[in-house]
Length: 265
Image 1 (cartoon, rainbow, N blue to C red):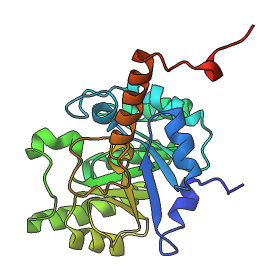
Image 2 (spheres, rainbow, N blue to C red; image 1 turned 180 degrees about the horizontal axis):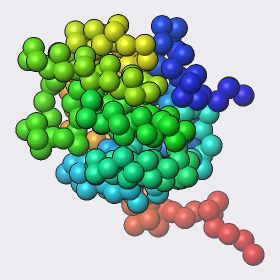
Image 3 (cartoon, one colour; image 1 turned 180 degrees about the vertical axis):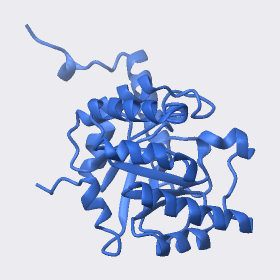
């Protein structure tokens, strides 16, 4: 049996080999991606969009996250289980940030992830001081999309390069074990990867990072309009529609259930 991945072990992978992380939101998804050998499973607030049908992530609650983290944790994955802290679960105060991080840990998370740079350093430091590993999230931060005017590529302006460097340094000083860089100009993501001592795990930020993360539903072809940086490794939408269509036909045609599916006294 493969050795359990911890936050400390994931951090030590920097410079040794690339890290593969993927999202999962349910017991069966977690079991399958863990069997596939991922290093980390992120129970992302993206569940609002890909599981609950929301327009964005802003209406995902702590109760939503606790429920789905618990479902994933029940699969007892070998991979590191990271729980996303949803919008307004950490912004109001340091105290709320620590208490909500603890809720995710009690549900089964082995680390938490939150968005933001220098302005969130005090929250990160307090959560780490409470004994909970923290993964940072910089670049495009979806929970702030209203302020930034949509889902835009980060790093096209010179001042964004300077800010990202400051933010990354502040997160490292606060104690993060890794940093997600989302939809960031590849040259900037590569620079941050070189500058900081913890792994960068990128989504839509090019190949010169310490690892990659994708939303499972994008990877499997379950979302109708995936982002341009997501690679589709399967077309499960067609497979599911075809399988259910065959079921409908067999039920209406009296084919299912057949003899082999009929119980005997």
